[in-house]
Image (cartoon, rainbow, N blue to C red):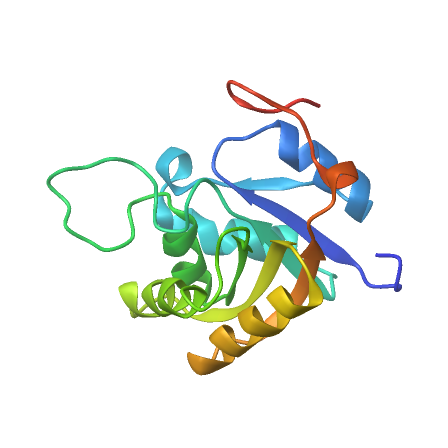
Length: 172
């Protein structure tokens, strides 16, 4: 938005707090995309309506990429209502945000797993969070390159960026 783009903000799932923050940041209503509540067939039209006149849409996921409604009778890789299922429905690339603390070369295996777990999901890149040093960043970038996933951003480990949390999420 600061660069002059019209941004359409979305949130996967029934969350009501995040869309309000998204609305403040984007200057237009934050909207939910929740296939469990409205049905998978309505996700595309809701997305199209909410992104009319915009240059870009940003969809924040819910829980883990493949996590959604627990259904033991369904053996699909991406659970109903998951971020992965919504991304596949929209044909949207997924940008992973990975807590890099405690990772080095094993990041390649983690990214490979995300990239190959469900063939309907396209990983567009990764943002590395809590990176400890320049050397740590270099090793992580090499690991991501090894599996062909671009690093789109790096957030250093900084105490002043920590956000307190409580039982059901972050403290507003």
